[in-house]
Amino acid sequence: MIELATEVGSVAPVLQAGAEGGPALTAPGAAALAVGLAALGAGIAERGIGAAAMGAIAENEDLFGRGLIMTVLPETLVILALVVVFVV
Image (cartoon, rainbow, N blue to C red; front, side):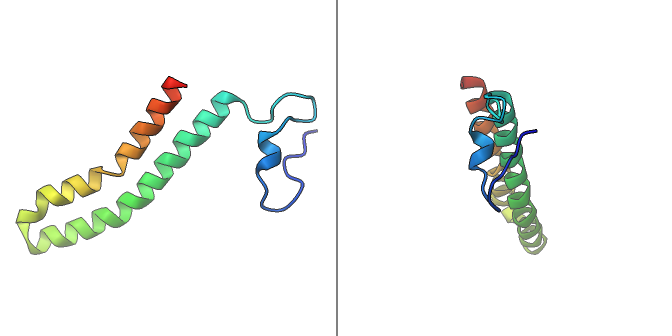
């Protein structure tokens, strides 16, 4: 049985060698974790930006272009994470 953490809040043992000598987190697992966390962060950012953009657009329709750009901007984080996965 692999023990994942020796102390509370520590992720270092997950990245080190497991009990059988192999890594506890492989390269595909690390890539999936990186892209998943990037997508989660982008989604949380878009939630607040989208709400503010819709409020601004409701008051002034000329702000649609700026609101759209600001809403799409966090998605570049996920695209960059995918590029890193395919490069590495």
